[in-house]
Length: 495
Image (cartoon, rainbow, N blue to C red; front, side, top):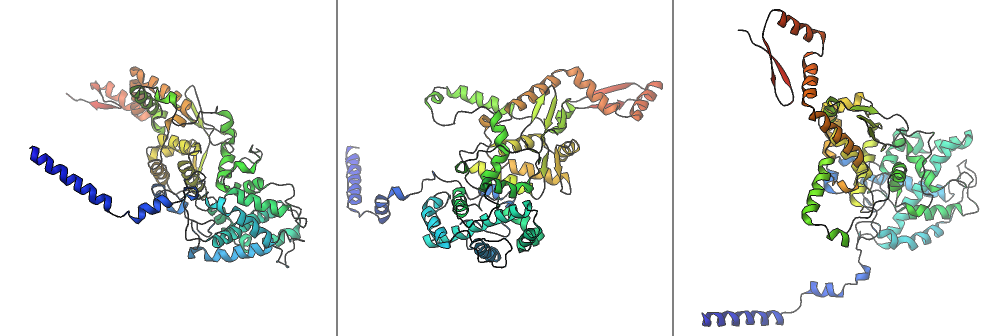
C-alpha cells in the first residue's frame, strides 16, 4: 500500500509539473488584459429584448409591423419603406419642405443635431441590454438622428393636427401620407409602444430642447412639453376619461422611454395610494429570520393570493360588479368590501393586448419597475379558469372584448400568466384578495347553507322543477338526495 501511495504521489507531481510548464491559453490572457471600465454590467439597462417565453405568448405584440426604432431591428429589410418616411420627416424638421403651409419652420441645423447625438452615443448604447458590436459609432449616431427626428416630428404634427382650428394649417398636416393613410397612424402608435422599439427618453428630450430653443421655431409647441405631446399621441390606444387629468412628474429625467412614460400615466394614482415599500434585497435583518419560518410565511402568502374563479365566487354569494366611477382613468382601482367586488373595466382588443403585453415584458425585465400590470393580470388569471368565467365577467361589464368568442380571451389570459414571474411580496391587490378569501372560506364553513343553496340552484331554479317535485310527492314516490362534495342529485326510487 505504501509503495502504491508513493507511486500515485509521483504521478500527481509529474502532472502538476507538466501543467505548470504549459503555455497560458490566449483566452486567459485576453481576460486578464480586458479593461473592465469599458464593460457593460447592465447597470444602465432600460430597453430590453423580449424574453423568449413571453415572445411565444403572442409574437405579433412585440415585433413591429411597419417601423424600426432603435438598434434591435436596425437594418431589417421589412421596414425599408418607413426609412423613406424618416428621411422625409427629417427634411421637414430642417425646413426643406418649401411646399408646407406651416410657415417659418427652419428649426435647427443638421450639424447641431449631429453634435448632440455624438455626445449622447455612449450613454445611449448603455441603455440597451445588448452591445450591438456590428454597429459602428457613425452608424449608431445616424440611427439616433433619423429615429429621434422622426419621433419628435410625428408627435409635433399629431399635436398640431389635433389642436388646430386653422383650416389651412390642418390641410397642410392632413396632406402627409402618414395621416391620409388610415391604418398607418394606428400601426405607428402600436409599434412605438413596443419594448424592443424604443429610444432613451433623454435622447428625445435633448433633441426637443434643441428644437424649441431655436429662435426660428414655430409657436404651437412653445407651451407644451414633450411629456404632454407623448401622452396625447398614445391616448387612443387605451380609453380614458377625457375629463380627468393625469398627475405625472413633470421632470423628463424620471422617464426612461416612451413606453415607460405611457405606463406611468396609468400607475400614478395607485402609487399615491400605496405606502412606499422597502426595497427587496440582501439585508442583515432578512438573514435573521429562521429558514423554516420564512418558508411557512411564504406559503401562507401564496395561499392568500389564490382566490377562486369568478363562477365559484358568484356561487359563494360574492357580487362581481363593474366599477364605473373613474374606471377608465384608474384600471387598478379594485375594491372589495362586505362581499362586493368592484373591478374597473378591462378593455381587450387589438390595441390594448400588445400594449398590456409590452408593459408586462418591461416589468419582467426591469428590476426597478413595480409589477402593477403583472399583478393585475395575475389577479384576472385567478378569476378566469374557463370560458364560463369570462362570460360571467363579460356580462358584469368587467371584461369588454371585440374577439369572436370568450374562448380566445380565456386562452390569452391563462397563457400569459403561465409565462410570468409573480412576486407575492409586492402586490397592490393583497388586501383585496385576502378579504375575498376570508369571505369565501366563511361561506363554505356553513355546511347547511351550502347544502340549501345547492338544492335551490339545482332543483328550484325554475317553476318546472318545483312542479316536478310536488307531483312526485303527490303520488307518494319516496324522494332521497344523494350528496356529493359540490352537488346534490335528485333520485327517484320506485318500489
